[in-house]
Length: 428
Image 1 (cartoon, rainbow, N blue to C red):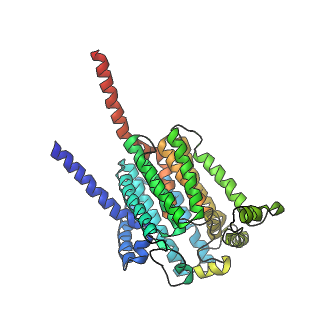
Image 2: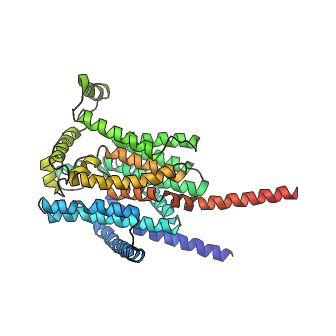
Image 3: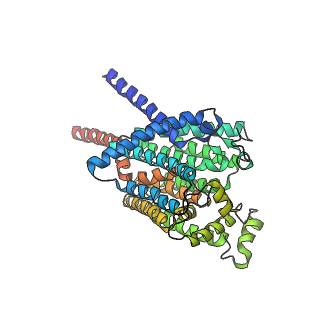
């Protein structure tokens, strides 16, 4: 019996290692692909092999079941609707290739997560949780050991001006932190039946202190929001205030208000400048974002329905004043593919939100909902890793299945406790 249990445990350890080796490369951890010689080649080799396997699996499922799982229909439409618009507006093959390679990786990663969810075994959550825990801790140690940055990436002044650590330059760390804390909370549900534990709090504090040390303002605000959620949920597990519907309404209000105020459409009595510069000592343009957003809105108005298509960084620099896009995910989506692109994105959000709201009283739905909200808050100021937020919506759509897989063991434990209690009572 002992040997059998040991064999099962060894199998799961080996399977977990394979999951880490197969999935972590999809995150393209900046230090591994930028600072290590040939790191990008090895990393991308693994991604390509796993991606091909994922797409073959997807083709098999679609052909045999004659259907595409709901969230993937929206993802595919979202990814590919911009291609004809790019051809119409002048085809830049290199820019299109640069856009669709990470898009294919993100879709493949989401498909793998879907397969793991359908299997009903949460081993993938455990494996990713442990891997991101280690990487987050390594990033924290690196920040302390190299306060001026571990390395500078790229030959241009724009790239080399950033301090880089394991998770890249300072403003990009938080999207990894949110994903790591989300997985840690999900695994906590598996182990304890609750969302918060010492391990979760410790991971969160490491993320928060790391963010404070690198002085990333937007990231700090988002992590404080996550911390408030954790503090309240830690005290009251059945709090009904935290639902995806409330988060999306609040996000829409913040998005519209931010664009209107920062771009200067409404600024009564110079209130924006007074609050940001005089009171908080911050740049009233949000580090030049107001100019980028104003330019993006101007181009959106001229190509409202179909957008501007996929463009190279040099074209984006000339049109927006920045080579990486609109510095706001929604503006970036609308700029790229117009209203059509935005509606496909909205469709994905709403199908996931519907499932999350239906399961709003489950711990898994609450955890994924707050993670999505935190990513949306980050996306107010910049674009985020598409792989991370797309997979969150897929997980949101299948939140009940994840919840069943994570709480199954807890149900077994409770059943055993009930049986012991009933047996004790019958003896009396």
